[in-house]
Length: 326
Length: 270
Image (cartoon, rainbow over the protein chains, first blue to last red):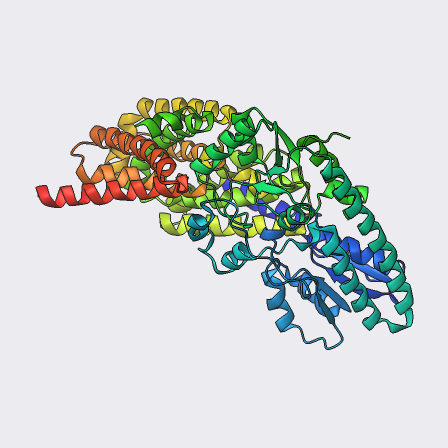
């Protein structure tokens, strides 16, 4: 009886796998004539999509809903990268696996854009008294260590995002010189929107009475906070989502929230906000999403969410949490 | 002392203590039998099976826990079947089942068309982030598991030491084994959700081996295992609060310290 059940389950499992492997792996077969662009994270995908218009086919490597830090590429992904014309990634800190793949790819035609190449990554700020005491937790793994020291989340700052857009546009122009003007014009138009977003955020945050973002996840908004003169508090020592917070840090956050009279705490996208929920409950605060845009959920992908929409949503929720008085 | 009282004011610390102690006692009671049956790694193995459940959850689009409990129960029966009927040693059986599960989980997760949340973060809990709902679950679980152990105490005891003899006595060995392994499966699948993988496997192994170092009788061993487990959770939570260190790691290290102390005690009194 058991043997029958075991073999049945195996059979069902294999049959579930086969149609999926063949059909949904390559969700859209490459259209001939257009050149292929592969991006790692969602913001890069969205930027490249805006620049490409109808001249190139842009795809996102990360499956929807997969947390960017826990992603591991599949063999099929590596094949796709090696067949692509343009590969865009954030940099070796955010995607340590990308460097390894690129070393193994022999396609001489592939142009690789490291979006953070021209941006000086900022060091972790010593904004908590005990920040350095926690370094030991973060440094247990090699790449965690790097991730813990330099902040790779450049795209959350709309000003740095414009630099990324320009870098991507240059890559498009180099790959397809015939349409160079088209790409540069698209990039310029999009950068205008990003500049507007910057102005909009600046104006709104100036009218906020509170300048501290209380965050229950690993803080991805360092560049954003610095750009707009905001402070931030997080129970995690670095930017790495893998380190565990200590009970003391959590109680400190609860006390700070109570003292500051802030009744909102922000949580990160895609992960279950367990720690944020505990702090919110202890301090009687409400939870608000601060979307780091590393990646989007399947629902958001189907709705066709854009980077601008995510950031505008963040701004609305920041206004609520930081006491906007317009 | 005042720091301890200060810590106790926080609801999340209270829940960590209550949830941790109850899950810890479940693990300690089951651990004594599992360690004697050479199945001590089953906690680790079944936690890996949880990964396969995540993959399945992607397809079925349901709460990970409702998928992981039956899947882990099935896997535990499979381990038992392999070790009893297929002539595979228990450690190899655990390794086989957990490797297959991890492989299936990874394969399923990667052929999925993407999903709405990172399910891995939903499956693996942390002792500091136990919800009140999970505290109730762990209390109910403990009552159930401890009740089962009391109900079948003599049978479990006989099988743990001499399976053949138990058979001669007319004890339904296979049925009792199934009950033990299914209790373990439920404890592990709830436990990884409540306190996380690392704590579950160490709470199964440590209190049992520590107690077996010094206990003369079987009843005393079970009692001591529960005491060590409870103390390690209490000390771990408070020390991690005072010293500002991660709680899970401190609980495991406290368990290890107990083991070293009992080991030295045993050597000295011999």
